[in-house]
Length: 170
Image (tube, rainbow, N blue to C red; front, top):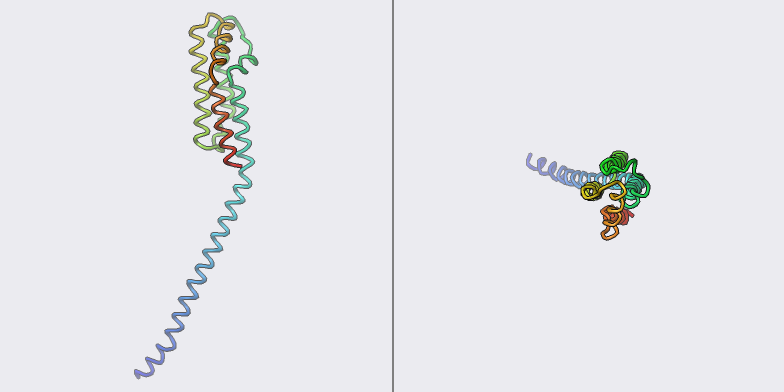
């Protein structure tokens, strides 16, 4: 009886070992195939998503150009001689541009969006600050132009940040 049990174990043990080896080999093979599929899908998503991201960065570059104080003052003439009316017109224009591009934050990095938002706020705050010391709308225009001839507009900083982000993507 013991001989039959030992003989059975002698047949069963190699079969069990072979079964475990086959199981782990197939498991490794299937995991490897799943990993390859995931990498393939990720590469496909990146390939399809890159044009969308680049479009978002392009739109935000245009936004920065449109809210650049020097260019904005040349594009938007005063509606009256009242400083506050002109300031409100400029701020409304900035807010409209910002709201138009608000959805682009989905496609760009958090740091890039922070740079864009900071540039917008810096331009708005500077316009308000200069408006406090300006006597008329034309005076506001002159003071802003003089102020930004001495310093780099915050929109240029945001543009540089966007350019670096796009270089990383490409």
